[in-house]
Length: 82
Image: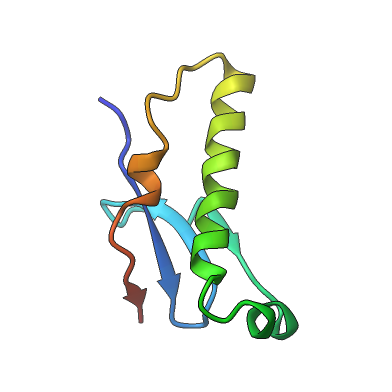
């Protein structure tokens, strides 16, 4: 069975990829500087999603595992974790 992941915005403003079952710490955490966030205030989540998607594809390529569809990762409903 494939693992299910979700992209979330953490209470500190970081964007994270984590298991949807809530187990463990985030697999990936992206922190944007204040300058970066002010340069694209409404787009930082979309940029983080693109970065995570590219990483998932690359991991699949390097490990020889076929990644079915990374768009399902990026389309997960985002929510803020407190």
